[in-house]
Amino acid sequence: MNRVLECRTLEKEILTEVKKELKKKQPTLAIITFNKSKYSELLIDKCLSLDIYFKHYSFDNPNTRAVISLIDKLNKDNEITGILLIEPLPKNIDKYACYEKIDINKDIDGVNPVNQYYLSINRPKLINSTVLAVIKILEFYNISLIGKNVTIIGRSYNISRPLANYLINLNSTVTICHSKTRGLVNILKNSDIVVGATGVNNLFKSSDLKDDSVVIDIGLGEVLIDSDNISYTPKTKGIGPLSITLLLENIVTSCKKYK
Image (cartoon, rainbow, N blue to C red; front, side, top):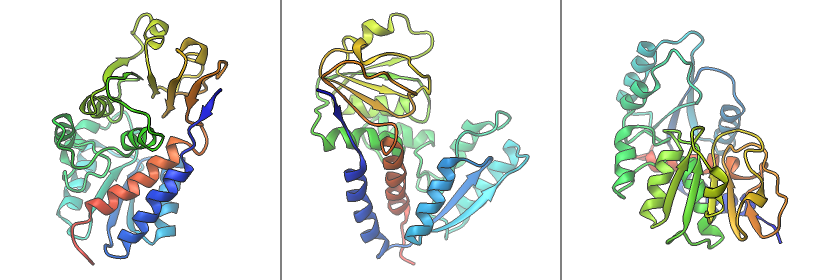
């Protein structure tokens, strides 16, 4: 029988803890956007509902130098405790140069390569909230990762690669697949857990998986659930809202001083 791995209960639990911490700490978040997005709107709404201070910086015609200049300014501003670049960045922006400039203690999205390095050696500081959402929902449902074969579809710098490192730290065997991967279905048939991060619809069917597999959708697109014994996260009220709540947790974690 199919099992839906709803995320709402876990989201509420984490939000309760965040609210407790906000009574002791008052972070200030710098949000940098380039286009309107549902994600930024949801995040701003969450900040407003929790009275989290934030400053919103919006670029219309940005270049890399201007973005880095702003990041340098925010790094030096002691009132700013967290910095977030809302993806996607315009193609003319060198996003990796921008990531490198974010203070690792204010890097609430875990994009600075130093923070990714700390995760790779199992000494994490700030970790991407979507990566955290995947791990926490598996833990919430007592889905063991030890010795499990986990396939990640997608090879993004922000999510897929740090997620692979996190899973390896938890003693999983990880395969990363991408657009040039051959024999995807054969790989899926040997996978205990499949994490999708591509945005491509109908890339596979649940009948391509073995029984008792787990599918975590973090941007997979539509997946046809056409067989029994598959556990999966829903597209709505799934990993997305949970990752925003965990980003709020990162915002609190990055706050070093009381205000």
